[in-house]
Length: 471
Length: 156
Image 1 (spheres, helix red, strand yellow):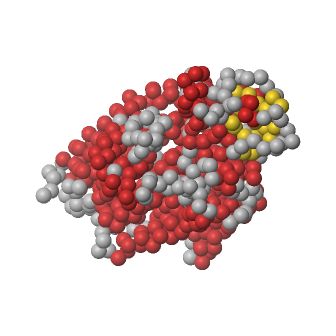
Image 2 (cartoon, one colour):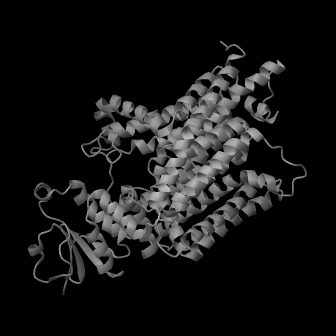
């Protein structure tokens, strides 16, 4: 019964997101809807959840009626834009889609692993310290007491934003119980959503068979089931970040305006999931600016989109700071700690590098992406490589900075996951590698077409790899 | 400077081959790990999760089970710890992490029961190696001590 509630809620997210995507781009065919459905699902989930965080902040209760109103509001807002913009309704495709038999192999592997993973997600109880220590305590408090109970939130890291507690509380409402075990299915669905969304976002700029190889690797990562089932905010943050990165990269290459809207929605979700989202948002905005070309006026659109995405995070900041709830900033403030603890920087960089490049945790996904990006710097179109490398370097420095500026006796620079969260935070850069690498490898492989044809590839859809994919 | 025209293609093919190989090598481990995780989780319920968590931080299972049974859903309770935790850690072999985790663990798993910072009249007491005498004569003990854990009710 609980799992059914999770599934129904997520079906509503898909419906709301389908309305949003219809508004920002339209649907040509039902086949296209199926191809882009993952983007619709995650966009709907992000939009509804971001708006839902405002409900308890302003004293409202997340009742079933409120949740349905939020879903309808988001979906209908998208549909209204669609009507104004005269977007097309989906029709049946007149031709049969070509099937890439080679790509079906990693697709099958991914699907089988996800099914196996569902068996675990459905029944594995919550045991992660951060989950029972504060994330799920907040979620249950919102569910049971109808809003934000200050006596509980004061004790449970109040500076962390609300998306995960609110998303969980909405699930509890649809389950009819605060079943944290069945909630694992919501985390599983986030992974499914990303696996469904990435091929849609990359379909014009990366070869499907390479994209699916990376997605198969994503669900086979040694840390995948361990981290994804922890019911903490780390993996949702990484998944929203990966979606935002994917949309930003596709926009940098193709300049299709709807991608910027997806980027904005995902970025808003990143910013209300964890405080660290600010760092990840900065990574993507800077990377899109540098890769898109600072001299192109349209490139600067990412800045107002970033600012708009930050707006929903402000009410929560006002809420907890106005009540003088405790923050966990280092003594003397962040700026002071950044310089006074500078001696710890080498150790911090070393820790991030060791955890990020640890084969037993993440296989060799990141080194492979970095190698591909470096090689792509020698090609004519450097935008994907520059985007990836800038985002990666800013993220790498950022996670290292977090280590050295927050270092204390209780937060040492160590691999021990019970004392230091870096083993979780570096996952964002692993996911960045997974969604960027197919584009980079696609570019390298597309050079074959350049050599064979002996003419420069057209850049109409954005990149050489796009042309190769469509060839 | 531009790379030789065939170099990127060959490099790309090598990287894709490495990617495919990495996946092939990893697959058996991934299948086993997910199957093992499913078997380990089978049959556990909400209390099972709480007990697994209690085990992880070194808290006695009986104490957690009794708390679930003894406290009504609308109860208020306080977790009371010893004043001198280091001494108890040495004398009774309790880990510091157990003391650190006991209040947040109950704070989550016992919801919607409300946790108080200190016991008041009409609330329950989850005493974990606490000084029972210091709580006064109005506490009615509902359970016997289970590895340092005992549940009581503070009357009016």
